[in-house]
Amino acid sequence: MGIKEQIKTVLREAEIYRTQGLFNEAMVKFKYASELIEKNVKPENGRHLVDGITKKVELLKQTISKYNDPEKPPEMPVEIQNLIKEKFSFSTDKESAALDGAIALTKFGQFERAIKEFKELLKMESFRLVAAKNILRCYFSSSSPEGAVSQYKEWLTPGLFTPGQLEKIRVFLENLLKEKGIESKLPAAKEEKAVVKEEVQAKKAPEKAKPAIKPLIEMPEADKEEEEFLDVSSVGIILETEGKKHPEIILDVSFQSGNMVCLIVPVREKLLIESMKAGLRLNNVQFYSPIAILNGSGVVAAFTKISSGPKMGNYSLDLKMFTN
Amino acid sequence: MAVFNIKNREIECKIVYYGPGRSGKTTNLEYIFKTYKKQVADQMVTIDTEGDRTLFFDFLPMGLGKIKGCDVKVQLYTVPGQVQYSSTRKLVLKGADGIVFVADSFTIRREKNMLSLKDLDQNLKECGLNIFKIPLILQYNKRDAGGSIPIMSIEMMQNDLNKQLKVPYYPASALTGEGVGATLKECMKLTLVHLQKEFKWAQ
Image (cartoon, rainbow over all chains, first blue to last red):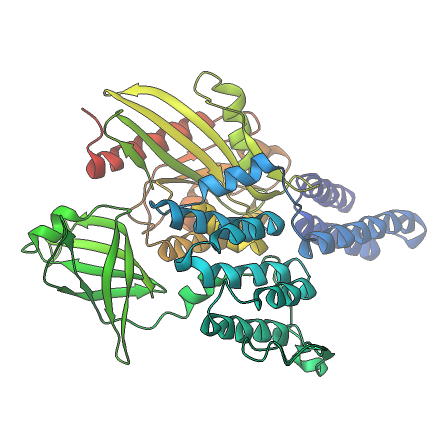
């Protein structure tokens, strides 16, 4: 193939990649074509061509930079938000599903709607704390730390939270502010009356305290908790049937990934085997780790009979853990 | 995770189209939406950016009618392929009953295919699923571009992506529709057979 033909082929390829949205690949090919021209074509003939390619490369650079640093996800129409809520709620009980839905909205960057949903969840004692933390996180993700601070101040009014819960929220919020490079001293619940002025003395922390790169969508609180789950060596399950509590069944953990554990259920555990099905919530579960025993609950993610290998005939139970 | 309503004898399952950015996942769904009108239960929902990149996911609900005495419903999703949308990709993958991995046949995208398959493996593990156990089909898309662009041979793609998995694969062109229906049908078949073991949905 002659050099002219080769240049034409490379340019054609680059153009196809560009139209296909493969911008990095197009840029590589355009640059290669440019090099071929500069090496093989007389400057007076090749200059216009190289100039044209340089412009295209510049445009591609701008496009790539736009895609690599996307703006905040747009607020979607209510129908789409409802679809997100409906399709990405995986829990079987209504309350947990509502929490799943609100978290999904956060993950898809629908912060305003997510805040509304989490505010509804504040009415439920069991979800109050996690909902509050997620509300604050939503404010941060939508670039409004001030909103988070004023929301916290609103919650200081006695009634909704216990002092213990407020203290947890305060520490959580201060950490969020610190992550953003904002040092602050927020009023604690008990000193609420004493601190009237300037509760938040926001000042810029040293440059190095700033987070390196802001992720597109910050991870909701429930997920962070999943990542920090302790290593669990065995799990105790107390079944309840018709109001009767059965003795605890202790199962060894065969592997763990975050808050998901895989347990081997021996075939002799007939009651457990008969009761298990995907989506079932177990309300009375103990998680034994080398440093602590945690009380909590679990949701059955999968329950299957082992059909081969040394454990054949037994059952494999994948359990999602939730601690109290 | 599939839902089986024993009383109404209705099963609803989820198939996710996975693969690197710009490999043609959305184009697959668009073709299905246009072509299988009888089976399409509702409008296709697509949430993309200005440059046609999937931002969140695409969603297409289908009704296959009665199969072995059971009303079968399938929901098709695509994940956003771009690397930076890892969090949403994981969420869309959650609860998948079957997967179509759409690989790009362009030689220049060889590494991206392999990285995306590795990403699928990792994300499945995080969902408590196993890439060797879940119903999975590979689709080698953009076979029609061979005249103007260097594309990989099927053998090369098999060697890169399917050497260990050994799952069914289909050459395809989502733009023309070639191989799109066959890919989906095979994935549905494998998924329903797999779910039969779990739910015994078929009479």
